[in-house]
Amino acid sequence: MRHDLKVRHGGRILADALVGHGVKMAFGVPGESYLPVLDGFHDVADKLKFIVCRQEGGASYMAEAYGKLTGEPGVLFVTRGPGATNGAIGVHTGFQDSTPMVVFVGQVGNEFAEREAFQEIDYRRMYGPLTKWVAQIDRVERIPEYVSHAFHTAMAGRPGPVLLALPEDTLFAEAAVADVPHYATVRAAPAPADMARLKQMLQAAERPFVILGGGGWDRASCERLRAWLEGAQLAAGTSFRCQDLLDNRSSSFAGDVGIGINPKLAQRIREADVVLVIGARLGEMTTSGYTLFQAPVPSQTLIHVHGGAEELGRVYHAALPITSGMARFVEALAQVKLDGAKWAARARQAREDYLAWRQVLPMPGTLQYGEVVKWLDENLPEDAIVCGGAGNFSGWVHRHFRYKGFRTQLGSTNGSMGCGLPAAVAAKLAAPQRTVVAITGDGDFLMTGQELATAAQYGAPVITLVVNNGMYGTIRMHQEREYPGRISGTELKNPDFAAYAHAFGAHGERVESTDQFAPAFERARACGKPALIELRIDPDAITTATTLSAIRKQALERRK
Ligand SMILES: Cc1ncc(C[n+]2csc(CCOP(=O)(O)OP(=O)(O)O)c2C)c(N)n1
Ligand SMILES: [Mg+2]
Image (cartoon, rainbow, N blue to C red; front, side):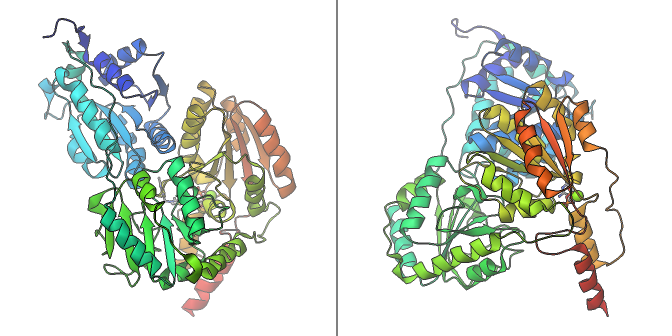
């Protein structure tokens, strides 16, 4: 034992380890399973803020959003069994979004292990498919080593969540151990020979297209990439819910390659001869259900750049696979000079198609939700953060809102409901100077609406819009298409949302016509506390382009 080291209990060793890795904020719901950690937090409260939430689902979404926004691991603490099961949703989101997260979960003491003791779960089995690595720290002396390993793993290659289980005896035990210095971010760089081939392949193209997506990006790389794309006169799209990787005002931006894709953009990608994919996995949502590219060998010549080597060749055979971190790749790409004369006109047309697609179409009802989104697009500060969950209401935002810079969008690429409000709370706590808006659905919002209490408790004046159509609209849409007229399991009887907000000490009001929105938003912005605006839309207005009744009619006609 080194004599210069102080004896600390496991909880304090863990709290010090987090501070050593630069953690300034952690999210969670307490449990008696990790009392020594809460005690450790007491000692480091001036360096690390522990944000206590109302449900682990909300806490895990907050940790995920924090990781996504800052690029540093989002840290989550949940208790054994019930906490661990509630908290899974944000971890699944983080995994599919390639968001660095370090999750800590309580565990029964080693003396009771494998008895199915109170709230005991084998987290290696439960969380195996949701994380990059799961481990359990059985010896107090090894806490610094495990925590260091966890941060390195969360950040390396393709970022993602890792989970450490904390047996009670490990936390209560004491040891005199040294801390480990701040983790390093380990990411690959492209080989010069690969960049030379990339240049050759792109320069030979007639109809090139670029898709950006995935995790592990940073602001400087996004800005550098924008300049390169514009210089090369290349058209580019962004993968599902990664719309903020390229300023949507760029002459190269051709739209989002996600759900409800512009059919012209989809056609353009299908017809491309060379596609450069930077960071995106080419998942189901980005490929329109694996139809934009044929699996396993696409007709387009694919150059696929990804942070995780195991992702390359997983679905699609790439003519040129490159393992690289995003910053390193963009650094190398900036040296690649291309002559865009051959494809410049096509890129201009792609941009024209996007601009036409953005135009707001009229919908049934007195509240034109598309106009509301357009107003937000034109009136929010450039660096405002727009958070969203899952539901048809998000389609208007995807189509009509222009994301104007890195991390102005926080959403779930796993289409997980309920992440909008918690993501907004985390974003406002991490970046208090920025305007933060959550756009949610009536179903979506109430999955985590209780986190308004967290917003109020920590003074996070986020603005939540609840798009109320009185139903789980997405599912109703699919229902009307498959089983027209047979409504089942999709109706909602909602509370008075403004009154709900008032109960938390938040500002709340309802908007029923387009002209009421701007003044309501200004009141919400000025109120200095969390605010909620319910948007009553006509339930028939089911997407940006069609109505429920039209979908039903078409389905009935098909059946004739
Ligand atoms: C956690 C979770 N549960 C269920 C679903 C399935 N789901 C996807 S969209 C949706 C309905 C969303 O309803 P709402 O928030 O009211 O939005 P709307 O589609 O009506 O605009 C449901 C139930 C999901 N994606 N995530
Ligand atoms: Mg709804």
